[in-house]
Length: 222
Image (cartoon, rainbow, N blue to C red; front, side, top):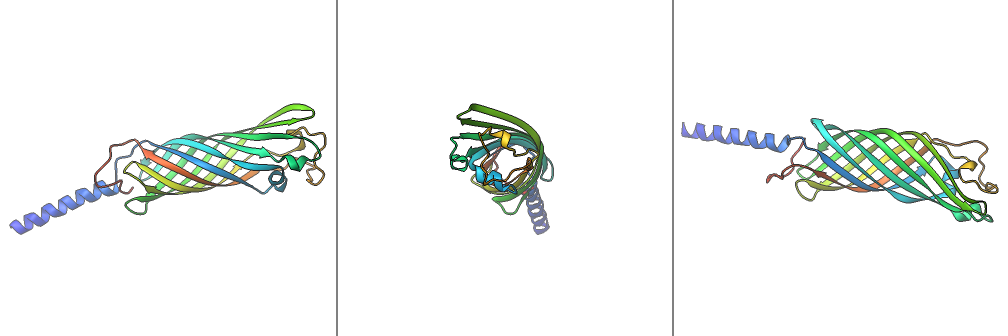
């Protein structure tokens, strides 16, 4: 009888621990990423600009077994290749600000590691700024933003993790000579009509932090 009671107690304790380990309480999560956007699909854009980098931040909340929703923003910078416009003197940058909603799914692959799959949709604001002999010139446009990303994270503590992020993004914005206002568009770059939309492959390093109390047994799984 005592052995049966002991086994039952152990089984109940193990079940409770497993439930606590596999299904933690949903909590608000903040994420931030340093990214490098790599343009693809428009050779002229690649030839005229260089990727400087970007940063994004978002907050999200899981609602069911790792499925969650969030909102966030991203800022990216591209420098204008001055040599591409030679012999003209033209410098400047392209700044992109993106505001998005996010649907994400997380799954723990181990005690300290988890993956994230996410889809985003939002709006991107592009600002082209150039300086030339004609003076300073600014051109602005907006476009629909869509994207998908994959992340792999490793916990440094119960509530803090760091990871690698890979993604693909598309902006419904277009490249044309009037974005830069040059005296003459470089003849080696053929651009008879606006080209686009913009496509980017992104690589990033980021963090993820949960706003919840730490547990001795670790972060667990969804």
